[in-house]
Length: 352
Picture (cartoon, rainbow, N blue to C red):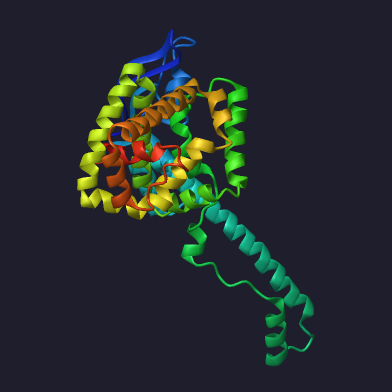
């Protein structure tokens, strides 16, 4: 029975040079194997792949029928103290890793601060206790030490101010998969720092909303956002005007849908409104535009679409505009969001 095997493994150092190609082999328990070949043929590379020190460009290395990368990941996460349930979720859906990692680091920071305060307080008790300790002296000293209460689960994992999840949702869809230059990397780091240090109420509100969701739901929002952004960027002038006509139809349909209207009202102040205001007036916009022309095109098109849609409703469909005001009430701020609310509400149908 094979304990480890390779399945159509390919390994390349660059596009023009493959060290290993379509390698399939099985290694059985209790047998000794010799790997022979000339210098540079891939012997060391193969051993690195079998030991989980590197990953194949294509194909799989299996240990007892399990992808060796999964095994190595589990080992690394366990070494870092991650709970099994969290590791299982990351392995099942790798796209949620940024959420879990940022949440775990935030919890560790809180634990560290709590431990430092506890150590300081206990040190005070040790220093102040008399030579002959009584119940009364111990009680009085412990009270004066102000030992912090244990952190409960909600405090440990809630209210994550770390910017990772927030930035992933807001800005990552605009960024190329591989940031090309050190300067772009610097700008991305700057955005993370600005958001983490910001006292902007919209960031706080949106962060609370995102942190109330499960990682799978956040990833779903992220993917949906990316698809929508790519669509908006792809539009030419005619496409923008056609999309306006589509949005008007969606608005009419959405206003008839009680479930969607209820969803909009429930999430307007916690999700839709802060998202729109951030995209419209954020200090990070100029930085993102330097990293990605994708964002500059999106901003140009979305402003154009929202302006066309608002002008059309104001000029030809005032009745529909009045109906929106009547049904949505204070959950529609046309002035404050520069008409982005129209595109956002019309786009609800796209989210179903």
